Length: 251
Image (cartoon, rainbow, N blue to C red; front, side):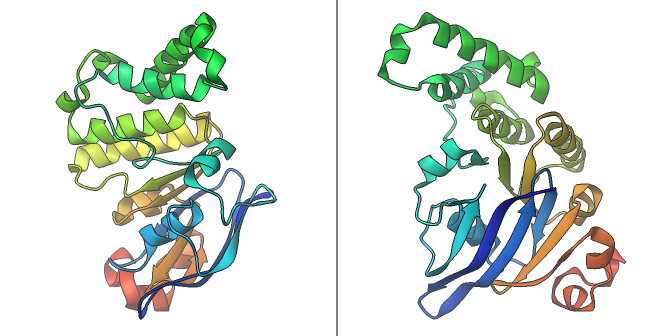
């Protein structure tokens, strides 16, 4: 598989704190990978750096052979690297369908003339219905977003991200705050979506059952530094990772 995303020596300080310590990774197209590490390890900061939410002090981000290091988040999304849970705020008093429809309509809006084009509205409506069906929320499409369970709210966030036709989907703790049955549901959903939409998926997660259950590659950040990366069996037995984060219980 070819490399779709390459991060070279990304570095970031906040005052005297080194939150990203010359991190370099190469992500292959179609890869399902996880980023793990203790709280404060720099995982979310790493996402912020590669998606343009905060500027890096050093290093480069190459997406599909294009340097996007200094690009704004909106441009990076248009190129195909989409971050769920930060794509947009939900309209809590609007229906589930309308939340996805409005996101789809925005994506179909190529120029100002789009609002005079009835086909754009039709296409966006059809696209929204398709996404809701694939993600399993069609049954509650007429509910207000505020009426959804915590788990379904996170699934709605992913639905909105999918309307933007991502090539790379970034997920920041997709199962946080979920009950055990919801976490299992999310794990199966992420695998299904990854395969159906032929995504490259990168997710931050603390639930090691999820991580070792679906990730093909696991990368471990500790104090802003990448200390290990590789397939699950390699990470599971990595002494430095065990000492720094996993402990013996995952063996």
